[in-house]
Length: 404
Length: 102
Image (cartoon, rainbow over all chains, first blue to last red; front, side):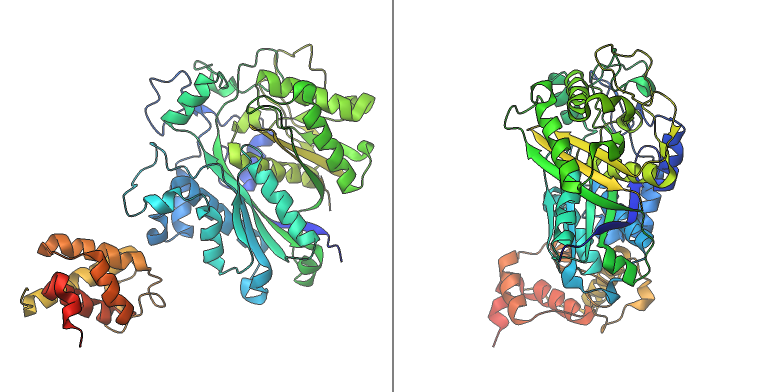
C-alpha cells in the first residue's frame, strides 16, 4: 500500500546560520553569507570569496560529536553528522521505539572535503576522511540503524536525489523513516582553481556580498558556498502514530538525465523542462497548483537562461504568475548539499507563507522575464512548491513539496 | 627480548589510561582494569593500532602488525586490563610474540 511521505525533522548549517530558524530569518531579510575566504590563503586565485559556514560551527559540532569520532571525520562530514543529529532532535524520534531495520540513511555526497584545506589529516584517518560513504555510515552508526544506508553522487543534484530515493523507499513501504540530505564544501585551492579554469565562478572580488546575482544581466558565474541540510522523512502513518510535528509533505519528484554534455545543460532547457513536467505529473497536481519555484538559479549564464526558458515552456502564460527565486543569491552554491538545503528553505516558504528573495537583482536580464522575487521577501500563501536541482553531467531533479 | 620491570608496567598503564581518558573524553578515575573498551568507553579497534604505534616509538620495538594480528585473533582483547597485558607481551617478545603460544 502506497504511503504518504512527510517531513518531521530538519536541520540547516550554512553561511547564514547554524539552525533552520536562524537561516530563515536571514534569508527573509535578504542577507548574503558571502565573504572573503578565510579557510585558506586564496590570494593566488582568480576567485577569493565564498559563503563559508561560521566558525561557531566548531563549538556546536563538539556538543554533538565525540572527540574520538570527530578525529576520523572531515569538517564537512562533521557538518553532515551534526546536522543529522539536530534534525533527529527536531523530529523527536526515539529510535529505541522504532523498527531499526526500517530506518535508513541516504546522503548526497559529491566529495568528503578531504582537501588541502582540511586540517589534522593523518595516515591513520585518511581512509575514513576520504571514503565517500562516510557521512551516511556515521549517521547510521550513531543510531544503530539497520536499514540501507548509502551515498548518492549526482553532482549538484545529489541531495535532491537523496530526498527522492528516501521518498520512494517510504512510499513503496520499504522504510518507515529515512534520514536524507547532503553536506559539501569545495572551498579549497584546487577546486576553486579548477572551476576558475572552466570560467564557472564569479570573479567579482571587490564586491563579494553582491557577486551571486542569479537571473541578472550582469551575472558572471556562481559563488561557492558550503554547508549541510538534513531532513527526516517519515511515513505519515508512522509520524501520526507517534504524534510527531509535521513540517510539510513531499508530494512527488522527478529524476532525469540529459545524456547531452558533461557541463552544459541541454539547449533551451529541454531537460530541465521535462524534469519539472514529470515531477508535477508524479505529484498528481495541476501546473496551476504550483505557487512557487525555488530555482537551481546558479548565477551562471547558461543555467539561468535555460532554467527560465524551461519554466516558461512548462507553465506557458501561467509562468508570469509563478514566483521564482534563487537561494544561491544569499548562500552561494553548496554543490552536493544544495538540493537538501533548498528543499528545506522551500518547506519554510510553505510553512510561513513567505517567499525568500533573489538578492542582488539590480540589472534585470531582458531575456529572462519571470518574476524572480527581486531583492525583497514577499508574503504569499502557497500550497505546492517546486525545488529544482541540476548537476554537471546532466543530472536533473525536481522535488514537489506540499503544505500541511 | 626486553625485561618487563615494575617501572615498565607502570609506564604502560599510565600511557593506556591517559590515552583512553583523552580520546574517549572520560575522567581517568573512571577507568580500571575491568573497563570494557567498546561498551564502557565507546572506543574502537583503531585505538589499539594507535597505541601500538605509541609503544613502538617509546620502546623502539621491532614488531610487525601482522604478528600482533595473528596473536589477537586467538587472544581477543575487550578490557583495559587485557589490553595492558597484551601491550606488555608485545614489548617483551616483539616479533617473537607468536612463539610464546603453547
